[in-house]
Image 1: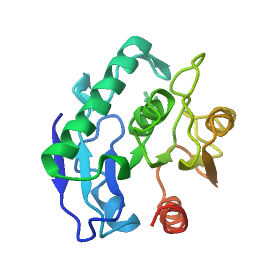
Image 2: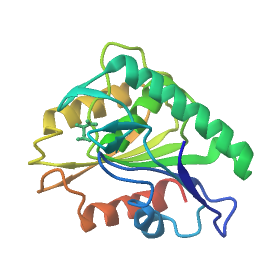
Image 3: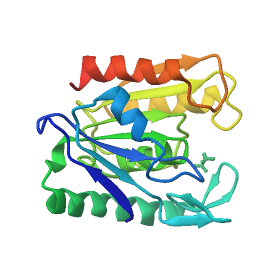
Image 4: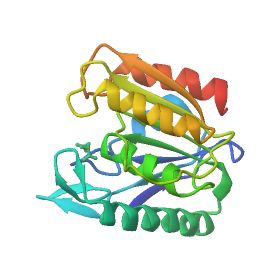
Length: 202
Ligand code: MLT
């Protein structure tokens, strides 16, 4: 997959995997890595799917309706890519924390839904429930930050709470941070994610 790798100054710090929103690129979330863990190595990935020229991590049939077959295929593709990138760039595959926004948060959520050891932890900015009706793996000791907007028209508060419940039932330790905002990623949400990261993963 197309990506940027930046070697960090602290090889013991979690490797941050950055996953952009619809229409983004692997450059978009680089400032988040700086804000959250500046000493970490960074692997920032571009989604392999194009929707009217806009990169995404999996196909959708309509706004909020996912192509589940493609989602499952792309989730495995990303997990395999993380395995290969760890070998190529020489980082610890078990020390990977995802930071995703919107569509990128949804594929990160799907990694958590499908693979027990894909991520050590995750920061999910405005995620949805990636799919329903599957048994989640054991996510004990997996800290997850969810950033959500009370007025988000794409991820409703009810869907955020459903995601929190599903991940919590799988054993994950979850913090939900609410903003009085919509789908956009605000500075105060990033600051809250940084504080959470220092308490849970640094
Ligand atoms: C998705 O398609 O993953 C969600 O609707 C969020 C987005 O618009 O990217």
